Amino acid sequence: MKAAVYKGNHRFEIAQIPTPEPGPSQVLVKVHSCGICGTDVHAVMYEIAPPGTVLGHEFSGTITKTGGKVSRWKVGDRVVGGGGEPPAESENASRNHPRYNYRTMGFQGGRTRAYAEYVLMEEWEPISLPDGVPDDYASLTEPCAVAVHAVRCSGLKLGDTVGILGAGPIGLFCLQAARAAGASRVLISEPAPARAKAAAALHADAVLDPTKEDVTERMVEMTDGRGPDVVFDCAGIKGTLDQAMTTVRRSGQVVLVAVPWEPLPVLPVDWMAREIRFQSSWGSGPGDWKIALGLMKSGQISMKPLLAESSFIPLESIEKAFTALMKPSIQLQVVVRP
View 1 (cartoon, rainbow, N blue to C red):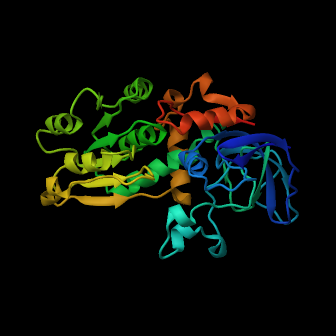
View 2 (cartoon, rainbow, N blue to C red):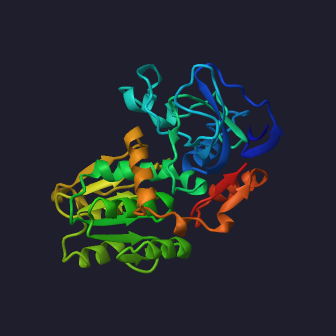
View 3 (cartoon, rainbow, N blue to C red):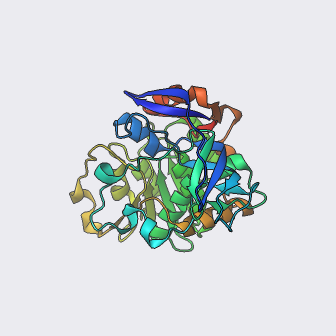
């Protein structure tokens, strides 16, 4: 089968590698499409992925072979590449390790992932793709579930006003998940015109350009001098975490959703007297995936503003896409079709 094999030094090679055969409790999935995730970009950017790795974990596909002991799936079933409930012995370290550190412990090596034509999975790993959710949309279930998880972590209440810093894919999913959770207003900060346009298309109540206006001042002004009840930092760049802390209302909640790899400066004296709360949000759990698919099926989460025909690339263009994404990006979503 064809695969994009990471060779080190930010380089990929399109190579023919053996197509895996499922064991007794495994399934073979033909990959339909696979989103390029920021964590994969970080794995390449910071040389965490060892040479020989095949990355890619945001994918949808169809089961083409099953092992002899598999009873849950049959050939032809449409699935999303994750979201299944793991048995205790297969639980990810990020969920059960008492001192988990993503930077030093996070990379899951040793298996071929979805920048390839086929992926081998344990029977419990995938979840069924409901009718009405197209395969291309389903490939973004994982980042959608990340946003669902962040909103569920936030303690957002019916009628709350939400601020979101950064309208990349995660920020746009947070916008929609917050609406579904009962937010009355969602205020967005985003400098890139294409992303700002997508936020407006998804009915953000205000889309602010941080290069042209003071986001904190404007969000406070639009909330009668209080500040938003919850602020999600979906950018994770220099200044945004401190901006979130400065913007949120007294006793409000700041949620860090982005995964910053560089130190972020904060000036606590500006905001600590308001006794605000901070919550980091990490990844997602099986329940979040199912909620995400349900919201997608019902139309409460839309993929249309995130995906244009130019969003889809062949496997052969993956190195060029990663090179672009390792720089400050204005793109919305890139999806690989192996």
